[in-house]
Length: 283
Image (cartoon, rainbow, N blue to C red; front, side, top):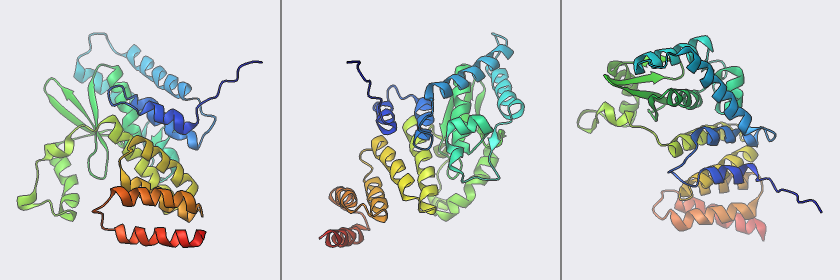
């Protein structure tokens, strides 16, 4: 009998990618997020498309190009020649988070555009990182004469003054003013690959929750729990999504996991009541 190879499910594949922080394949992991929506997606094709963009870019650059020249050429190529930019017409379209769609339409949200940009920048030998700036993901590059912060939605380089101005509403909302103020540099720390993927999944989570699309929300929660196995609030949110689908047994398991681990949470009593309600409904 011929051997039949059992291909991993999208979730199993994703889980295998996020096991270790030492060798975390950011581009491949982000590309794999689309597999729930595009089951036939060829991830290696997506990675190959990005490699081709990098090869095109490298052909334009002299081998001895200085870091600043490489950065300028990258921005010219990415934002002007290829016209990558923010999807201002449909910001909350889930496709904005799926790299295969972003590569096709050249439109995305700051964080998905950032992932592509960082991959190209790194391929050019630039020290580029993502920045979990409040409300709007950024990228930064360390150059010999200082640091450049860029908005991947527009390609604009931002001065310290402009960054501080963008922070003001966030600081006021959260009481981070006067003696509670913190230096700008704290908001510009590099995001880890795991943090980037978590932020992308939480963007999708909010879209699906707003649309009450519980099936898609559960799929996103499955990935968040694989990525952050001790983020107990994600078990709660998956449990509530299961309950909204009428999957009471799965809901109870997730909500009880939350109750066991999130002892000091403010919603413990409300979740305990929900579990009791679900148990009564099953009997």
